[in-house]
Image (tube, rainbow, N blue to C red; front, side):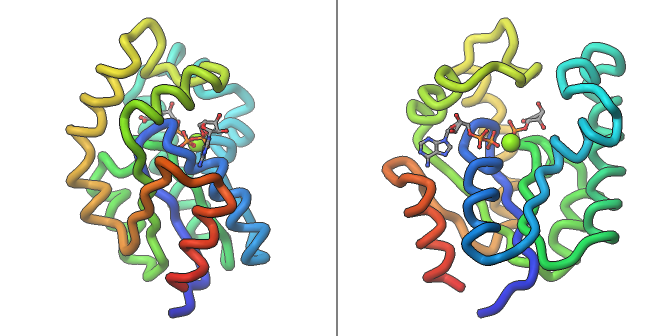
Amino acid sequence: MTAKNIIIVGITGVGKTTIGKVLSEKLDKQFIDLDKYIEVSCGVDIPTIFELEGEQGFRDRESLALKQVISQNDNYVLSLGGGCVIRAENRQIITRSNNLVLQLIADLKVIVERLVKSPNKRPLLANQDIQQKIENLFNERKEFYDAVSDLTVNTTNLKPAQVVSKVEQYL
Ligand SMILES: Nc1ncnc2c1ncn2[C@@H]1O[C@H](COP(=O)(O)OP(=O)(O)O)[C@@H](O)[C@H]1O
Ligand SMILES: O=C(O)C1=C[C@@H](OP(=O)(O)O)[C@@H](O)[C@H](O)C1
Ligand SMILES: [Mg+2]
């Protein structure tokens, strides 16, 4: 199978941004992180958008950014934010575009360990029991991740380079 564009979905902290970057280098494709794109186009970071406009304001910006990125680019690896699949209109765009949609999963415990180690720039997790919040978000969103994805890779025991090898094998 050949796929020109790859879109990465999955719960927050599972490794979408990290794997997307390594995968794009390996496949010689442009790397786009949707959260980064939103931050650059708004001129402020994600926590500030949540603070000023709330989650719905962020979701509106996220939907617009997704449309722009997909219509203006080609030959890319696109890492989405974990909540981008919530809206049906976004899911349609992700699947309609005939790309390879890669879902990353990992054991809850491992995701929490990874999140604790990385700086907290995730407003949905601020002042929360991270493990409980991740579990709730995953239960709410699981059906959406499954509905859009072509390939699911469990990264629990894999380094980023090993995750990339799995995707290459599939391709
Ligand atoms: N396969 C992996 N093994 C170990 N640590 C990882 C792996 N993938 C990601 N990480 C780490 O987990 C944290 C969250 O990764 P990130 O790419 O920001 O996730 P996401 O974009 O899905 O929220 C980062 O500190 C990253 O270095
Ligand atoms: O799960 C979510 O709703 C979110 C995940 C974040 O991206 P990551 O999945 O890269 O952490 C970011 O888009 C925002 O903080 C909201
Ligand atoms: Mg990310």
